[in-house]
Length: 471
Image 1 (cartoon, rainbow, N blue to C red):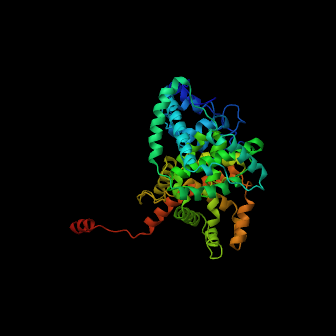
Image 2: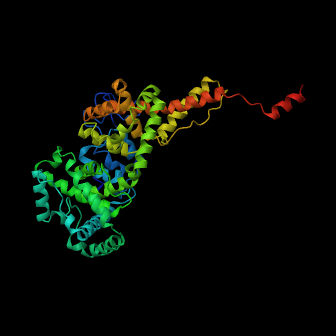
């Protein structure tokens, strides 16, 4: 597979690697949706290609043993190039979402893939053995297509097989597999499964899975069986993560992993690592916290729109909940939504990043020179909880400000939200989010200087004593 981190990858000299990463030509940024001012990498040789981390660039980030040694550059390219080339997306996501550590070698990843395969299979078999009646999805018979697919999946033993098997299960590996199975069994048997709680989770999962985006090609015709695979992943996660279990919306997120990776095992582990990091956001207090942060950020960026949306009859920004929870999955065209998911997951541009610090430093120096050095540039105060996804949300609100100001109640807000599905232009929103991000960085510096300018200057006691000596 092109660009895959296989054992054949070899990194040349540092000079040749740099040439490979920086040989892009200037001049086609705007026409190809290249959105960052001054920090967006230019298009590749020849131009006109799809945006994203390219197949010819990805191998250059590895050393001779297959370690992804240039992780910072890896995340930077995903962010600034607007996602990942679809031809290498499957391989890139395994690193991006933590299934493979960046420090792992090619040989270590082969062993790790086998361990993850065996462990997932045993986890899945554990809940199926404990709750055999739950193996088959409960489907309304009026949904003929899904009902027949669920029945076929159960009768043909599909629930016992794993989709997308890519590990080496040859006879030569039998001794290693036996040892891995023993380790996995110890892990799986140690986990306690609350049958009552899992039954409730399965009840909700069986309601949500049919509502997943079945219009996607991945679920069309024979692909409808993939909904059964999606269900198995969700139940396995809920069984072995009782603190998180299942929350509505997880089906859409796991669907994204399954569609891209086309492997039950890989989709499970990538989504599991993602959910473990984001688990707080699926709880009520996490939801409230994120909405409050978005409200605070909007107040910083546009006080007029903030005041309008925070009126008593508008219910604040709760209508943004789905955007933030699902990573704006339905507000953009499907391929763009996947690109945005990659961009946000790179975590390259955050308020504690080098880019943000560089912007704040530049603004501090500008004000320092303007004041002729009379005011010492203090470090500005920023809220590092304002993640880039909050700036994406704010960018959408700012772009649709005129429409939002016309909304007079919560019902009209919901109608407005529904009207956006698949209608937003990703490159325009990204550009606006970048502007909002750096405007916030600059504003934090300006606020700091304003405070220093308005504070009364304190004379030290020592200076008065010196003056008295020379009077």
